[in-house]
Length: 315
Image 1 (cartoon, rainbow, N blue to C red):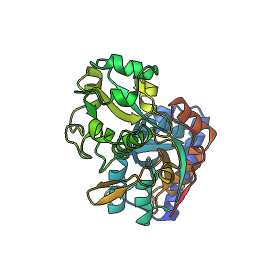
Image 2 (spheres, one colour):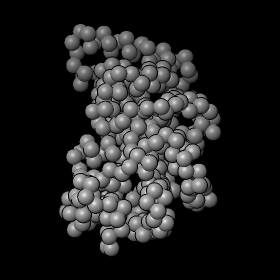
Image 3 (tube, rainbow, N blue to C red):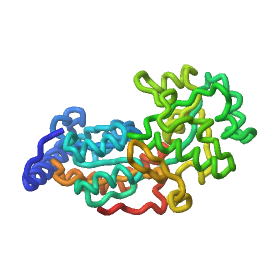
Image 4 (cartoon, helix red, strand yellow):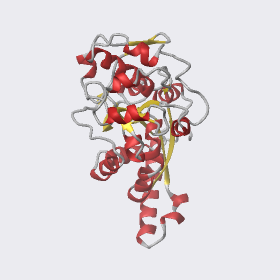
């Protein structure tokens, strides 16, 4: 994280650095030897985007845009508030769902955010769970997934809905399932209280606990288990938060957490340049690249879905 310079100085440094590095690449200098010469781009994001930003996207823009991407990722709500409070200085923000981006926009820190990818909520289960046979039956369409989720003793893990859209997504998915299957007490049976301390785990590696069978199942975004080949259950598209009009179709559904009201949102990833970005030129180039064919191909390879009819957000 860096302190801002003047707009003119930032853009001049970006252009001059890009030209110099491009010339070095053309002369045959290995990228590994040019890392110190790349212009830094700070990208704040939802934790679910970290693997892409630290992996294929970082490698691609180092070569294409001569940018050294530095990622700052955790729960999207927490990142949004850090940006608003001035604790986190970044050039670009990439949250999942519109809510965290709206927080930043309402504070005057971003004007436009474009959709760049989409996903859906799935239920990833442990291959060592004592309920693995039931999960596999549900995955094969031979059992009802929502009945399996009510098995006595089933251990569910989820993130804190007060600070993470994925923690709210599992709650809304169960609300939608309760409505679809006419099971009014489904949320209580599967998840308990909104801030259930037995399910909202702190400390330790949740993925390791899932792999060991200590945890039976958790709600997560599809690109995670799909890319890592972990077993998971899909849910219908009117339950998994992939539908862009999920709130309009279900206006009665809401969550009240710590004095704030939330509504179901589609799981769309947005990207926007932040005002007073230290590398404004790099941010603009990066956002244009994210919408292009190369970036979109990388998203498809990582099991992210196309944005479909999602539209840009405006302050």
